[in-house]
Amino acid sequence: MADELTADEVRHIAALTRLGLTDDEVEMMRGQLSSILKVFESLQQVDTDGVEPTGHTTEVRTVLRDDDARESLGRDGVLERAPDSEAGYVKVRPILG
Image 1 (cartoon, helix red, strand yellow):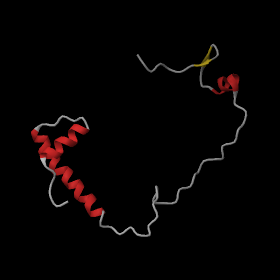
Image 2 (cartoon, helix red, strand yellow):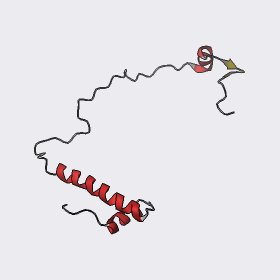
Image 3 (cartoon, one colour):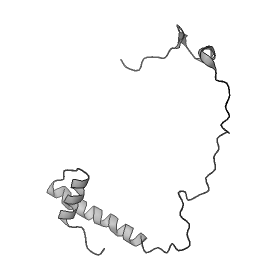
Image 4 (cartoon, one colour):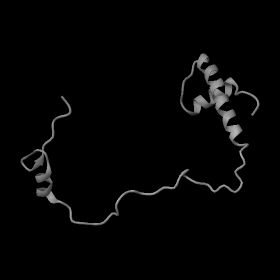
């Protein structure tokens, strides 16, 4: 892609994304989008033969414990551990005034 995007192409992209752009914004976006596309064009030049597709650049390991089924606390157990309770419910401070 040697050429910059045209104003009409930018307006088309804006319409697809439901953006209303002024003429000044179209010109600004024309330069910015063209620069972004040039970066992607340079990435297409990278030799990726023999490179396995991956979702992560490093080894992914979980640090979570095994998910073992066990008995839940129940109402009394939760209320005993709650900082404050009232009438069988956990009491929290109001967040809306």
